[in-house]
View 1 (cartoon, rainbow, N blue to C red):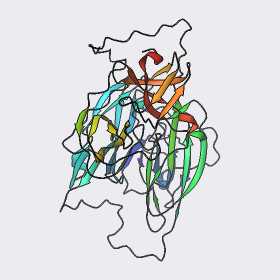
View 2 (view 1 turned 135 degrees about the horizontal axis):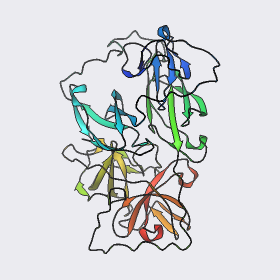
View 3 (view 1 turned 30 degrees about the vertical axis):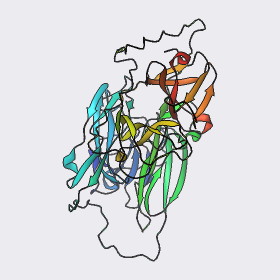
Length: 419
């Protein structure tokens, strides 16, 4: 509880960025206490932040906490992450959005000495229940040659005092529900460098999906100090899957010579692809836009000609040939794409569907041989319909793919899905 206006910061010192402000008399649950004495609190929108212990009052064991309604209950706050090609965090910003769609563009002035790798912009859609999709935005940058960016206020000195041995950091990880309830908590031992923490979906009750970032980068220095010091994953309830009536008849497919333009509330087509070659290197390929999605074995892009369909939150949907003669459509990091290629944002809709007949779920709707991903789902299985690929294939997402606890994206026939 605070008697005055209090700044909420991203770290436990006045040198860290301000991410919000607490009104006088506001009450928040305390997650932990930092080494500096600052409190890490859970905000009403599911994020966490630090407040100074000098201007707040801590009461242990208070079970009477009631969430405070934010000043504007018709907005949702979306974090904007600025990272380099290796995934290191360069800057974090925030934006408040109303219900509807908004085109988010990076503020290049925040990173002098860096150039944008991509994406150039990201479309964020906010539902009537104030759920943002995607829940966060990431822009990738690279350092320009012969330009040294200004050091961050909390940067370690260029020549730190050497230590005999690197110390580990013990980082608490919590899974928080929409009402602030704790689904699961644990502690991870992390070592020096950048560590990427992803949620274990099996630890969350059925029917809940992630509404915060699916991957959190935690930096640990040689002294065992972690930034951030606590990782919090926030979950919300998944919209119920609608079961079709027994007498439902599949919607007739459009004529092959026509591509209908559905209303904005309905799914559209994936963008037409552009052929190009990736930047030289080796890039892991995931079925969805992020490391939290299912990956087919050691799926990797290593070169050749690729098809670029579009981008989603720093990841690019591509198609590429395999050494065994097959094909795959999946996501790679934006850092794999040349700077002169500007993939358009994917316009997707999450519509709960049950297939009306048996479906073959694949990541190769092009060549159809030597498929490494091919799963059969009987009629009545739940999917989330995202978009059309063409007049035969529908682009879909499965929430918990084959019991892995990870979502997966792929293609099923439109006829089996009834669209």
